[in-house]
Structures are given as C-alpha cells and as structure tokens.
Amino acid sequence: MNWRDYARDQAGLAACLVCVTIFVAAMTALDNTLHMDSGNVVYMIGVCLFLFLLYWLCDFAVRRRHLRRLQEVLADEEGLADAVMPPLPRPANREQALYHELLQRIFAAQERRYRRLHQERQQQGEFLATWVHDTKMPIAVSRLLLEGAADKAPEELLSSLEEELDRIEAGVERVLYSAKMESFAKDYLIQEVCLEQVLKEAVKRHSRTFIAKRIRLDLRELPGLVLSDRKWLSFILDQILSNALKYTTVGGCIRVFSEGKGRHWRLLLEDNGIGIPAEDVPRIFDRGFTGRNGREFQHATGMGLYLAAQLADKLGHRLEVESKEGEYTRLIIDFSW
Image (cartoon, rainbow, N blue to C red; front, side, top):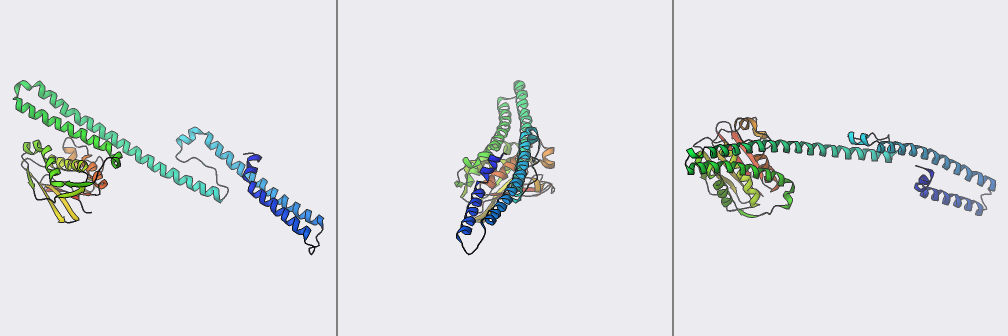
C-alpha cells in the first residue's frame, strides 16, 4: 500500500476537511463581531491541519502493516493449501474484526462441508467395493453352473442362472439409484399412484424368492391411490421386500396391510423372520449399517434401507421400523399429508 492508494481511499475525508477549513476561514473573515486576528485564524487552521495529518500518518502506518501481513499470507500458497484457517493478522479496528470473524465462520462452514463430502465419498467407495465383491459371487456361481450344465436339467439350470442374474440386477439398480440421489430434484414427478398395483409388481419381481423359500404373502385391502412418484416408490418397496425375504425363514409369511384413513394412513409390511436386535433398531436406516444380522448373512451392504429412507423423505413420506428379535420385523411407510 502506498500514499497514492491511501489518498484515494481517504479522498472523501480529505474533501470534507477542506470544506470545513474553507467554511471556518470564510465565517471568521466575514463576521465582524468575532474580532479575531488573521494570524490567529491561520494558526488555528494550521493546528487542525497538523492534527489531521498526524492522524493520517498513524492510520496509514497501521493499515500498511496490516496489508503487508495479508500479502504475506496470500504469498504463502503452501500454507494456504495446508491450513484449515489461514493465520490472518490481528485486526486493528472494529471493521477488520468483523471481517476476521466473518472469514472464520466461512472457513468453519467450508471445513464442515468438506468433512461431510469426504465422509460421503469414503462411504460411497466402501459401498462400491462391497458391491463389486458381492457381484463377483453370482458371476462365479453362474460360471460353475455353466461348467456343470451337462449334469443338470435345462429347466433347473435356467432357473438357477435367472436367480443369479436377479441378484446382479438388484445390485446394479441399487448403485444406480444411489448415484441418482444427488439429482433427485430433476427426476421425479408427484402424481396419483395406484399403490396396490405398484406393490403387486414389486412382489412379482421377487416371485422366484417367494417360491424358492415357500414364503406366503398375506396381502390385505389397500387404499386405491397415493400421491408419490411411481418409479421411486417402486424402488422403496423393492428394498423393503428384499430385506423381508432375506431375513424370513423358509415357510414364513409376509403380511401387507394399512392403518388409518383419509389423509392420515400408513402402509405396513411385516414378516415373521429373525427380527432385528434391539440395539440395532435405531441405526437400521444409517448409511452402510449392516448390524448383527447383516454380518451373518451374505449380500448385506447396508445401503438398501438407507436409500429407501432417504427417498421416502424426499417424497414427503416417512419410513419407520418396529421389530422384536426372533419374532417379527415391521417396516412402515407413512403416507400422511
């Protein structure tokens, strides 16, 4: 910072000082009642100008020192890259103190955002790694089935291959919906959706698992229409049914029914499977959480119910869970509006 820059910044104050000086000198010269000697007037004006000049010199020195410190901070590119908050110089006045506090808050907010994005990226990487590992298993099983095709009936071989392909397709769909979560606002349409039809389509997609595990479906009468997005709601129901089928033992039952009426009602999907341990229930919708059951069963990524809960929230619904270990698990979609 040089005198020219400082003078340009202080041009308004200098103009005011000149106007005040001229005004005082004119009033003193024109007012005959004051009887002030011209030498005294000049002396008074000189003292005022000296004091103003002294103030400007001190202010210039303080500002110059502050700006030099800022330039040193800006010149240290490595320090700026490594530091969470750059070592800003100590503020010299109230205005600088406010700017200092503002910068601290901005950096703190950016640090929180960076940490959140870093954590999400790390979780996404872990999810993709788990998905790749889980996808390799049905591929390997498919290869083994093809190698032993001569010893199996064509119908049995085809059924087994279709089951492995369903697993791969479900995993790919989960990854796709996870990637599309960021652009959800550009890809949804709220309209009247026939819930029973969407549910039956989801059940049909899981029909092989229902048949293979001899699981009975108890479907009660449901309300006709709901306000939702058909595609995203279908994905939510797929994830709930997939988890219910995974943790329901052979010969079990899945009940689907509703409670309430009008604007306040809920859809309940209940299975009589192994249930969820009480300590795991509060975290069942956390990203990547598999719990005790997930560690004991294969193909558990901890993303299915997390995505379902996130999408339900974006659609204006609410996903809840009730469970008792060894007896039942009940997933509830609250459509109240």
